[in-house]
Length: 303
Picture (tube, rainbow, N blue to C red):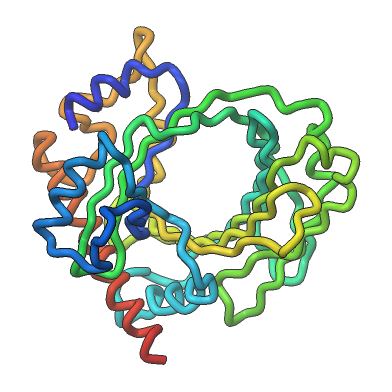
């Protein structure tokens, strides 16, 4: 990690750290291979991955209706994960993808009310993560991935500066639901349809994970390719873990490069006096979340 961090601190672009829980997808395999392989054989396959490819981590999970049920399980008082329902923050992010930019805006979820978009901004994300580590857990329901993405801040194109006036979102949230994707009206964007490659609406619920410095976020995302795509939207859900202070500390610059502190103390702040112990504490939190998701998935399956 220390070597990777040295390279990352030299990157002048803005960066984002995230832990995603999902599944490693095997895209290619040897002809005649069985659907199930031993851990030893799987390890050999992964040793060849960098040269031959064939596997990728997928953070987008199917069966989006599970997201609400998983979330309801996580906030149950007996799970000792979320301190109180008042700590659950609901947010919504609206994204338009063009040829080379992403134009984003945020809105808070207020049940039954029109949601006002704000904080319109534009970025140019890199196609590949600067760091992309995947840990496969054959005995668990979810694998996990630590990813660092880099992106450039851009000026919002003139045609999208009034995005908040052209898009209408209505939150379909009742008192029992913690998570719901709002209804979106983009009719006033019709004049820009040739520029729009994808429209995404991401509805999230997040809360502090126990007494750690990390937030656990459950999201449902509705994605439409193009402006008038046929076949309906793709609806998926996702689970992310991150530290709120990363947004600032990861991008802190001094002397022309990023500064993350001795032993990366500005990134991992919870415990430990050196990098090894800090990473150990960080990994324990990840494994704790992974085990919790196992229990949540089993509980939902039994309903």
